[in-house]
Length: 178
Image 1 (cartoon, rainbow, N blue to C red):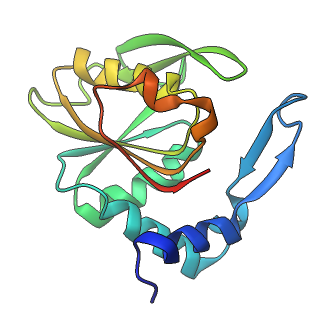
Image 2: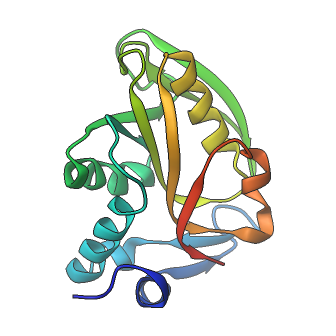
């Protein structure tokens, strides 16, 4: 078992994330985590490391779609509930909606209005922090629902896109910064 902090986990993530140029559109370098997900030991190490980034939480939010893959097992690991934040029109009950910009367009995220109890402490988990728009929109949804964001845990942070600048009021912890 690896030490799930520092250089060991950074090397593990780096070794299992593939760069795909010009996806989903020209000029974007996509960080493909499917090789990481397909390697059981690497995937397990990443989940344990992400779960250890913050203290306890009542709920863990996963952002559609790759955030679901990481957030659900993190929620299980820390014994918290899991809440999906989805693209507009995908949730069946009443929702809060939040528009946001991302590095190559804009979109709307939604969460069920009853997903959180007042005062719930919520951890946001996602695969990549890029421009910070998705994390900002998700934090806004959580706060509108009466809960409190304890932090943002991401597999990797694309520092050149300066996502932290969009969320200066949130604590961000990353397994790998590129």
